[in-house]
Length: 181
Image (tube, rainbow, N blue to C red):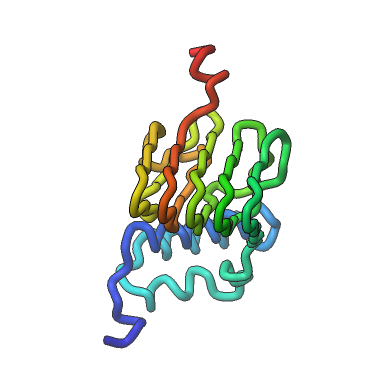
């Protein structure tokens, strides 16, 4: 089936809407162009309908991507660190701790891809953030998510994908936030 006839999903529309909104906040669109493009994106039923909504905008595939690798050491990020749009982590024997509770995140949605062979991972999110961990798998461990999965407008949404062959993935809010509730 030709691509311009492929039916779009709500997720496809949401990504295009985010791209249009981002272009507006960067000053690439006027408010009239924003309204016109958003209407086109929200009423699109096929890929062919979506394409004109993003025509002339920067390609969103040129992303802020950071790759972290370790053979046997621990990968840890905490405090006020800058979080990229896509974070790819590979480790053969080490564990991973990503604390986003005080991090600087410039995107409404980020992706964390984990490729861990023998280590476990913990992801700590700021209050109100959501996460979709459906793409994360563990052959001999657990995937434990204590955070809501449905994206909320105006809140950080994290997509976690990848494999932890012999490790466990735990996603939670900061303990400080839970204690202050």
